Structures are given as C-alpha cells and as structure tokens.
Image (cartoon, rainbow, N blue to C red; front, side, top):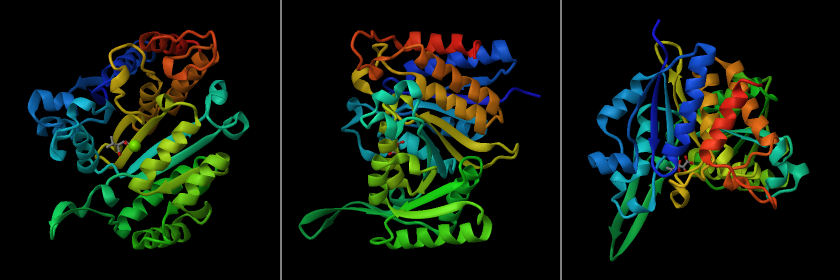
Amino acid sequence: MSNPSLLILPGDGIGPEVMAEVRKVIDWFAENRGMAFDVSEDLVGGCAYDAHGTPLTDETMAKAQEVDAVLLGAVGGPKYDSLDFSVKPERGLLRLRKEMDLYANLRPAQCFDALADFSSLKADVVGGLDIMIVRELTSGVYFGEPRGVFKEGNERVGINTQRYTESEIARVARSAFELARKRDNKVCSMEKANVMESGVLWRDVVTEVHAAEYPDVELSHMYADAGAMQLTRWPKQFDVIVTDNLFGDLLSDLAAMLTGSLGMLPSASLGAPMANGRPKALYEPVHGSAPDIAGQGKANPIACILSFAMALRYSFDKGDEATRVEKAVEKVLADGLRTADLLGQEGVAPVSTGEMGDAIVKALGEV
Ligand code: IPM
Ligand code: MG
C-alpha cells in the first residue's frame, strides 16, 4: 500500500516558517513511528500570484483534490492589498474551500493550563476551557449571489447575499451533532433568526435534524450576538457551537482569543468522504500571515503543528498520535517555553519559532 499523501501549501508571511516546524514533526513520525507520508509542496496566496499571476493555479487545485489531506500555512499581506478582488491571496484559500466542498470547519478553542493567566479573561473563566466551533464554510454571505459593487443612480452600492439551502444547513448540523456525541453531547446553534430569514430556516433545519436523527444530544439555540456575549461571560457553558460562515468567522476569532493567543489554535475543514473513506480535508491554523513579524523567527508554530495533529485524528484515524502531539505541546508550555506572542511575564525570554518546534519534536518522544 502506498503512503498517505499530503499537500503542503505554506503560503505567505509566517506560513513558511511555521510549516517548516510541522515538517520536523512529520519527519519525526516517519522515523520513530513508521508513519511515512508522501509529501508534496506548492504555492498558494500572494506567492502564487507573484509566480503565476493567480493565487491558486488549476494544477495546484487539481493536486489538492487528489491528496489525502492538504496542510495550509497562511495567505495574504499588505503587498497585495491593492490587487483586484479576483486575484487577492484570500481567493486562493476560498477557492480551495469551495471546490473541495469543505463545508464543516472545526475550530477548537482549548485553554492550556499553562496559559490560563495569559487570557484577557480571568483564569477561572477560561481554565480548562474546551469548546468546538463548527463553522459552515462553503456557503452563506461569503459565496451568495448577487454580489459586487454596482452603480445605482449616481452612487455605488455594495451587495453581498446571505443564502442557505436546507441541505447545506443539514449537513453541517450533522457534523456538529456527530462531534458532540464524542464530546459532552451538547450543541448550541447560533444565528439571527430574529432578523434574518436565512436564520429562521437555519433554526428550523437544525431543529428537524436534531429531532429526527440526534434526539440524544442536548440542543439549544442562541442569537449570534447573545452568543458572543455569553462566550465572553462564561464560555464553559458551551461544548459544540454550530453556526454559519460569517458568524463562525467572528465567533471563532473571539473564542480563540479567550485561550490567550491566536498563535495556538488549529482548524480542520472537512468535506464528504472520498473513495478511500477519508474525508476531503484541509488543515490550517486559525491565525493569519502576520506580515509584521514574518521572517524574524518570532512566529508561534503551535497552531500549525496542532493542525497537523487534527489531520492525524480526522484524516488518518490516528487519534492516539494526535494526542501525543497535543501532549508534547502541553509539556513544552508547562516547561515554560514561550514564543514572543505568549510573553507577558517579566523576565521570561522568548524562544524562536525553530526552538519551539525543536522542543516539541523532542517532547514527542517523551510523552
Ligand atoms: C479565516 C480567515 C478567512 C475567512 C480569510 C483569510 C479569507 O479570516 O479563515 O477565518 O474570512 O474565512
Ligand atoms: Mg477569520
């Protein structure tokens, strides 16, 4: 049998630096656990635009469709701000999500004990926090038509459309209920059914799927604005949150910051199963390309390394090995290692991106 295949797309800014650390983890698994991957690497985002005039070539798109999993670093940077919308770095990422039909975006927000004091909230509010946001990723206002800037009389009007079909809502709801069954068995669905028709449909469909297929799971509903408030007030009331594309974008950044740093959080974007039974999948850190610190060895590689751990769990059925990676991260944090984004305590000197990666790799053999 051939090795499972991975396509690595480091992207822009700190993407290549943090991905270099993931490579060390991948190599460690090949050498020490007999788990070899066929790894290929390609361009996405601004670097692809520089090389090919497009943020994602058709060839790269085709490769992404073929591999067992895609690992992405980050895209974007100020250099590309003035580009036309159709070729902005972000379009590369959105094309991957859309064409691979990665409708369920899993964004865990977990607070490592060693970092509880680091959150902007009190340690007892965030300590032990472990929630999972399931964000719908291929529809809603990100993709709805009509969209654009049009002329209306003598002024311009900007239009985007929130659009959801029943089946789009039902499939992401199922993802959330399935996950909840493996966790604390609770789902909170968030929309704005008080203002938006698409929110009314969202609530109806989630309720129907629940009644017909998952009555054993505890389901609640919240307006997304109230949900944001509750997330900062007492986040531990939540287990799995399921929500649409735009609310999920906002709420997952909010949830991420509860844990202290955006540099810590991984994500998995999953689609339907392929012929080999594995889901179509793309794994990426929640953070962006951080152009202000790119190339200086200051970036935190943990989010990207934990994204690879999610790949082990969701694509390769290696939950134990995923836990090993998570334990290794926990260990280096408990040992006091901090990249620059995690500083705050007096007298602690930051380690570099590479030093953090090396320490995690060393810890893999010790946990
Ligand atoms: C995210 C990002 C993306 C999004 C951008 C880079 C297109 O913010 O993954 O959360 O808005 O979905
Ligand atoms: Mg975002």
